[in-house]
Length: 215
Image (cartoon, rainbow, N blue to C red; front, top):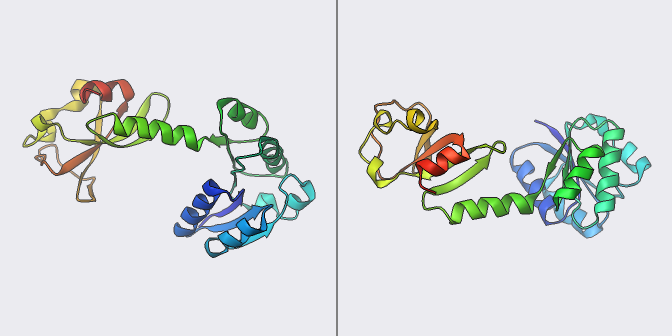
């Protein structure tokens, strides 16, 4: 179980609060808006109304006691920048900040953020890849070159074994798991025959996956 400080309870912040709650972690939520704070109470360990750009207020929270500090202020970049800087100054172990643009990400990283998330950009890329490709069902970016994809089986692979399709040798793509009806098989054999209702979780370079699946 981790202790999380979550600052900013807009739509994105609220979704994070609910997800962290479902995962069983402890969450301290902060927002300057009382209505938002009250709304998040069922999903957090504690919630306070406060100004995160106020150093004294943040000091009173004991920033260095949290495993991660997540700042999701989306409509006031000056407050986001000041909050990020203060979190790191006050001993934040891992400070994750939200950015809406690339230039904001650069400033946040220079002023204390250990990592930056851009939800609009990330979901836009996921949507573009998911809905313009015939075979791609899901996508997780690992770095600028590599990703994990959940892919449908091309028709010519159905009834063949993992060994026979041999995409590791041909394309440098690793099959991580075979999935059927929501069940994940991580211990498959190279001789397992692929069925039409199965999908694959594959890891590889974007270019290799595009070539293999004709994306």
